[in-house]
Amino acid sequence: MLTFYSEDSRLRQARTELHDGALVTPFECPERLDLVLKHLRQSGLGDIRAPNAYGLAPVQAVHDHDYVTFLANCWKEWGATGHEGEAIPNIWPARTMRADRIPRSISGRLGYYALAAETSISEGTFEAAMASKDVALGALEHTLQTGEPSFGLCRPPGHHAAYDQFGGYCFFNNAAVAAQRALDAGKRRVAILDVDFHHGNGTQQIFYGRDDVLFISIHGDPDVTFPYYLGYADEKGEGRGEGFNVNYPLPPGTSVATWMATLEQALAQIQAAECECLIVSLGVDIFEGDPISAFTFTSADFTLLGERLAQAGLPSVFLMEGGYAVDAIGVNVVNVLQGFEQ
Ligand code: SP5
Ligand code: ZN
Image (cartoon, rainbow, N blue to C red; front, side, top):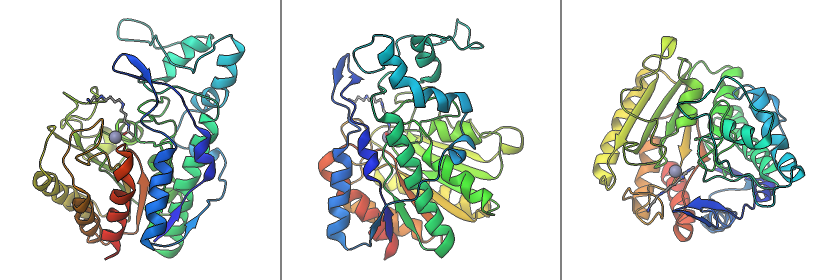
């Protein structure tokens, strides 16, 4: 299986994440790439390629134009207006205020376009986000052309990024960008299966009214887990999209047996919807040792996950999302991909 990867994913080197009331070194760090790359190389899984540059059009196909402009200019504007630290929002158009106008000040716009405060914008963040969606598009293009599976080692991740919001370490929704591209290339319906520990709120929101993308997410119950305000079982899509959004919230500590039984239901729905392509939002933060998550996968369980996904028999693209127990993420990702190839 080919891997797509871009050195430019390292351009995001944020120093600060608001965590437990302190600014800490971000969990979503460039070292994550080193660990996955090291294990990929040792595994003999296949070559690692740099993607082409696909420009902004595929991003603007699923994101708001002004949001993309905001991300492109934020770091410069933040610095030019005398801020010294990284760009972190501290005010939002929260429920009792107006969300129908976008303030001129960068501080106001930062809150308008943010859905969480843990994710700072730093120098190079936009460039890394551009590289990350190119990685996703490179992987997708390879799979469309050959029918072979591929892995996009995306960084930063994407599934929390909505039509016009960043957060949860995500800026562009790489899976949504890839799914739209697959549709534009002629696929009639695409499945996005999100196995990251956290609900893929951004992917859900982007496709909520559509029936050409089936979005299914298995994740920690948002009643007690980030992102808290989306990801419940009663969110089933709207209009034409009704029935094409499926959430499986599971309690913290859920056993792998229960998780895998839930996967069976998800795969049956993907089969029933006659999807022509599978995009897996591959978060390995379902690992038992993940520092910010609460599922119980062992490294060996990831192989079983890959094996089961292969049985769906669809052209498949794996896109990296979360996974923060740095020592183990390389093994866990490789186990999924090797399981798929067995
Ligand atoms: C892509 C992805 O996995 N993003 C995750 C973003 C999570 N951000 C907030 C995490 C808050 C975690 N608090 C957990 C405390 C555990 N002791
Ligand atoms: Zn996650």
